[in-house]
Image (cartoon, rainbow, N blue to C red; front, side, top):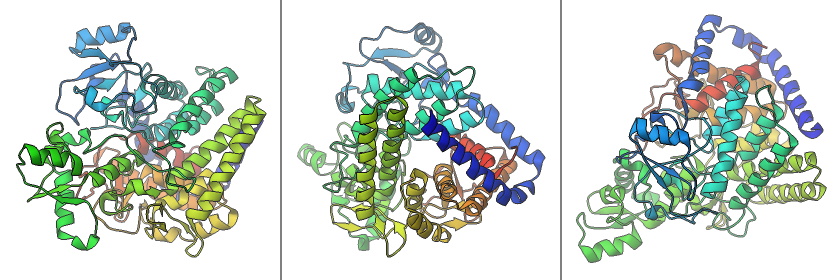
Length: 549
C-alpha cells in the first residue's frame, strides 16, 4: 500500500527529528518512575477490557435501572450471552426491529435502558464510562497498537462495523439511550492504524480493507446529510435526534439545576435558555412544558431540572445534546454550557471529515478504485475551500467556529484551532500562523482547552489527552518538532507526576497547576480514574519524543 506506507515513513521521520529536540528533557525523568507508569498502562488494557461474557460489562453507574443486555432484532442468542445470563442474572432482550439508520428506533420505544451487544472484546474509558465510546476508542486504539495489542484494536474496529450494521450508526457508546447520536468521526483513522500495523495475530488484507471501506462510506453519510448539515455552508455540524435532557445524567442530578442557577445570576449572557415554569405544574402546564422545555412525565431527569420557577428551554436541550455528540461536554465555546452547539459549523468536526475524505481517497487508491479516489479527493478539496471561507480567520491567524445561524465567526479561541494541522488541511502559511499562537493555550502542564475560565471541564485550566495529542501531532506534521516535543513532555510529566502521587491516571488535568485535583464549578465535577485515552496518548507521546526507541 504505497500511498499509506509513505505516510507512515513521513511520520517516522518526523518522530525521529523530534527525538533529537526532546530527548534531553525526557531523559531527565527518572527511568524507574516511568517504568512504573508504563506497567500500570500495560496492565490497564486488561483491567479496562469488557466482553459479553463478563458480569462487569453490563454495569451502568449512570442510570438506576437493573442491567439489561439487548441483542439486534432476530439475532440468535450467542452461547457466551446465555452463559452470562445465567451467571450474572442479566435480563437479555431483543431490539424491537431491524435498524438501518440512526433514528429508526426511538429511545422512548425502549423504556428499559440497557447495554447493546458487541461481538468482540473492547476497552472502556473507566469509572462511570463502562461501555465502548466512539471517539475515546480512537485514542485507546492508538495506545493498543503502540503497545502491541493489535488484535484487541482490530476487534474494536470491527465492533464499530457491527454497530453500523445492526444499530444504524457508530453510537456515542453502546447503550440504548445513545441511539440518537454519534461521536466525532474517527473511523477511517482507526481503520488506517489497524491496516498499517499488521501483526502475526492480526492478518489484515485488501479484502478486510474493502469491507472496512464499505462501512466507512455508511458512517460518512451520517455526517453529510441532514440534520448534520450546517446550513448552506457546505460544512457539517453536531446534532442529536432526541429531545429534552439526556437520560445518562440520571446519576448527576445537579448538572441541569447548576446550569439554571448560573443563567439566573448571569442575565448579561442574553440567552434563550430559560423558561418560567412552576415547580409542580398541573396537567395543562406540563403539556406546554413538553413543547417549550421537556416532558416531565417521561423523563426523571427533566422532572428534577428546575430551580425557583425556572426550567431550561427546548432549544437549550437541543444544543446540550449536540454538545454531547461533539465530545466536549461541556465548555462555553458555543454559548454558556455550549447550549447553542447545533448552531455552529465547528472546526473540529470539519477537520475530522477532511481527514476522513483524504483517508478514503487513499483506501480507494489501494483498492484500485480510481473513480472513487478522484471523488474523495474532490470532496476534500471542497471542504477545505469551505473551511478557508468560513472557519479560517486570517486577521487572527486562527481557525474559529462559525455560527451559521447568525452568519458570523466565533471569537472564542479554542484548542480545536490545531485540528486542521493534524488533518493536514492547513497550508504551510496557515500552520505557521497557528503555531505562532501556541502560547495562547500552552501552560506548564500542557495545552489547555481555551483561554476562558468558565468553571466547566472543557475550558481553562483543564487539559485533556486527546486534544493535547491532536495538537502535538499536528505541530509535528508541519515541522514544528521542538514545540511538539516540549508540549508532549509537559503533558507526560503532568500525568506521570500525578500517577506517582496516587497511583492513578485520570481523564483530565489542570494544566496550569499541573495537578489532577480538579475543581469544577458546574457540570461534571469528578475526575474519573482509568483512563483509556490518557493511557493511549501517554504511549504515543513517549514514542514521539523518543523514549525507548
